[in-house]
Amino acid sequence: MPRVLIVDDFPLSRRGARTILESQSGWECCGEAESGEAALDVLDRCGADVVLMDVCMPGIGGLKATKVLRDAAPEVKVILLTMNDSTEFLRAGLLAGAWGYVLKTDPETELLSALQVVHGNGTYISRSIDRAVATKVMREVEQQWKVEIRHQGQLLH
Image (cartoon, rainbow, N blue to C red):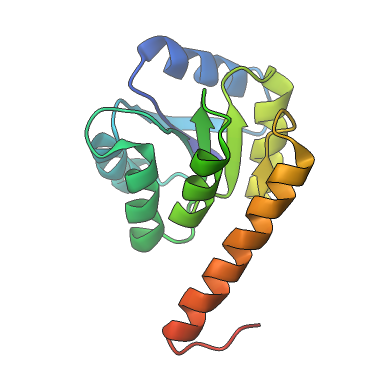
């Protein structure tokens, strides 16, 4: 059963995400955290497979926490949750290492779809974001990752 850590500075948002997870069989909420710093601490104890990470939080914030988490535990997948549908935030989130990007205004089914796709090693971008924009950003991010991998002296594929 996939284990999910919920990270959001608003208790009501964490409770909503937890309620959605608990309404579905096959998913377990293994913990909650109110900041990026707390998420890194809780992750060590709960052994999450997927992290639902708010983008805008006090402290290091969701984008920085995603980057730190990716470097520390690359097997853990992050889905960013945000109110911001801007291209810049999407690009920054994916470059930070997020596997998914879901808007808090999306229906519950969008979050569940993102969890399934990301847990299955796919990338998920909210259907609320224009497909042409999402595709363009994905291509940019893939090119950036290829450049970074080449600079690290590793072979692609």
